[in-house]
Length: 299
Length: 231
Image (cartoon, rainbow over all chains, first blue to last red; front, side):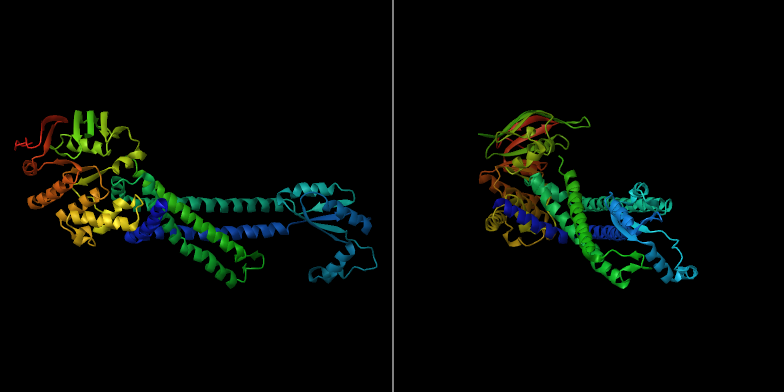
């Protein structure tokens, strides 16, 4: 009961102190808000860059050309063999007749194909389109496929794909580093602002010690105050990541510039982002307060 | 029975200054003791060691049987709850009302609200500030602010009240009013140790007096013995 009463008083005091030290609280809240807005924006950018790179990666296909003399039965057997290899996402067999048909129907190739007599032997090869799970392993998978009997060649845009993969890898890592670095900078900035807020209340801490408050009794209201400042400071960034992002997504119809760059769907991303921002605000607020208050508890 | 036993206490600060040098002193329960001396003679250092704001370099300070010097930092609150401290600059929180400033010292114990209310009103009545409980310290005179500080120091019923120049910022008339409050508290059984420069007060109250000079006890006077000899 006694502990409960003390905790209730601490919660009441933390609310009161936010208003009693209004200008300093506003400074702390503004600092938290500004830094978390930057984190929110970088989070949106990072998630969408990653989404784009994943979409491009998903589009990379190994085209396996099969020997001309194979029957459809043989082709299907090879398709099954490939399906059973590791790192295979999907496999789709396209027989040469179907490919010729597609070529003839396509605007681009129709002019070339019109000179071909359908009665003549089909010059094309049967092909299997393979999508891989891990694009980093594409070369190894293509090499394994090429060793299967009946496979003529396995093409996936060698050289370019590797280059693309390494560029995307750099972008991904850079965006993660940027977000983590921003979170660290945010933590540092917020904790220092709160430190200044508490610095001005050294006298209060001194009086609390003087009247017999234990260190933990002194720390708790300040920690709760930091938590409250963190929550208040994360409101605007949360609004930006939820309403702002939905607005952006709806206005651009879920894509940027062209169909290639599709935006990350707001749900569940905005909720996860909002939870992350709230968590950063709360943890950083509490840790900042604790760091500052600890300094004044040394005798 | 002794409430305080100070044995061969020495305090040397980091800069090499010896503030208190081999002081031994016993103070009985219910006593009112003045500590006087020139500026820099070690008065404040001695009482700071009593409420464990400073640690003795050597020697022992027993307060109600507890070795204050050996208390760990995180256990200091245990001794602070047994005593009250009043300063020259009052040390009130300007954003809290008179009532809240006094209640502040009780809330840390987790007492029920109505119990806190009863105790605060009782003590504000004792110091004559019951009518000003909703005022902020900045609206009060120096004497009134000091009375709030005294009320806060005694609200949890400490056995010992330490006063560090409580009348230093006050005019003679207000100083005497504060001394009357302190005497009343002393009569209720609280031991009082008061550091002061104000010889007029020491002369009038005729309590036990300890004269410090360069960190040592130069002279001790029993109750009524001290006659204006200066400091």
